[in-house]
Figure 1 (cartoon, rainbow, N blue to C red):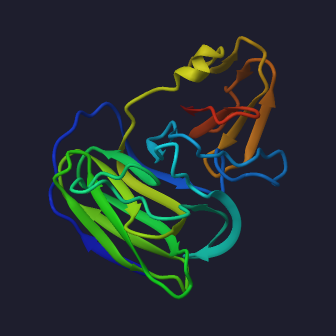
Figure 2 (tube, rainbow, N blue to C red; figure 1 turned 180 degrees about the vertical axis):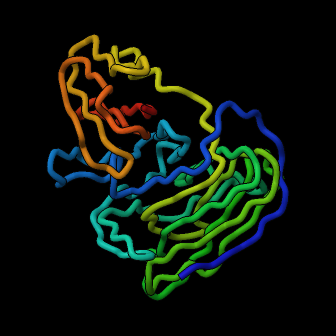
Length: 254
């Protein structure tokens, strides 16, 4: 099932780096992989959590997400085992459109397509997903997010570079995945480099002997070590490097 909505243009922001398409699957690393062979516990969202590939899961630290919970749903032929529960709405402080809690934030370089696999948290009440921009001049929506079945909803943005906020207008929505084209990555993970974990193009350096894990973008753990890891035998593509037992992750390209 798909629903499509065309947006208006919004304001310009600086661009640092662009990915053609990015998928955040909340059933895969670095999100909900608990119980999988070699997996890690689901991360929590008591504070803002920023992935290394451009998605921010935002909160004010007071009104929190329910978090990642196990729940099996099949959307467009793909089975998801985890959902990201909002636990309620993420309404902004009027008259602003920008939410202060329980929001997803994505920087994009311009026109893009955002797909969201989601369901209303109530089986008997539909929800509305709001899309707003960081300059506080734009507000659009995806109405009628069903509670009877999980589905993909597609939002086509046609404006220039922007920071886009996604949040429930009121009450909860559960997310299974989000994907977007033309995602802008504006920062690197200093936390991992401070811990002695970095990538030089051919080797994942582990200078402090931490327990590191390497995952494919599909969430399969392919390596773990307390030493530096050569990547010369890895297939070409993107990988996620994590320090075991933490939320810290680094995205690398081979």
